[in-house]
Amino acid sequence: MNEGNLHKARIVTPRGTFEFEGSQEFVEKQIDKVVDIEKNAPAPSTREHDTPLAEEISKPKAKTKTVTANGSPKKSSSEQPKMLPNLIPKDQIAGLREFYASKSPDSHPETFAVLSYWLKDILSVAEVSIDEMWTLYKVLQIRAPKVMIQVFRDAKSKKAYFDISKSGGKYYLTSFGETFVEYDLPRTPKQKS
Image 1 (cartoon, rainbow, N blue to C red):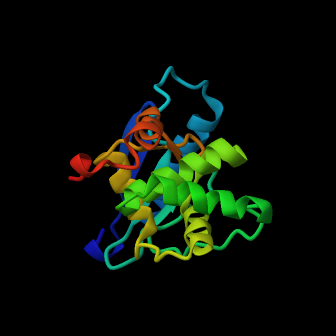
Image 2: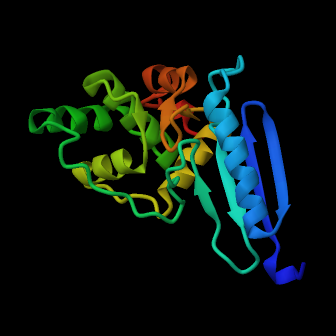
């Protein structure tokens, strides 16, 4: 097999990580087998915060394709967020602005936590994505970060404010994130870091 036709795949499941290398046909067959097994097998006892099934198929000098367990494409980090016009009822916009101003977040991860808290508390929206954050940034008329998904990643890995939902592609505010919004914001002058 020549190097130009070599394909690789890595699949992360609750049962473990599987890696395949070979022709495109071979790799795709192996992926299909693992996905079928995962769909039909009873769920193992896992922690709530385990990552969802994800597949990555790569070919030298080719784009990476990522799909979720049900075969639907997973949002890439370069995907543009979409405005969700029906997310916030018009009579709730003033309340959102007041809440945001009262918490005075001073970074994007803190802002994401504050906005997620408000969505969960007021609108019962527990899982959020870049689309919800983009919409709220627009409503508040504040400048959004360049790579919004990276804010979720940083807030998850560095601050533990978020974790990935089981449905994949969305995040939820952790109890640590909720406590931070409730008790640590707004900061007093001594708390500034």
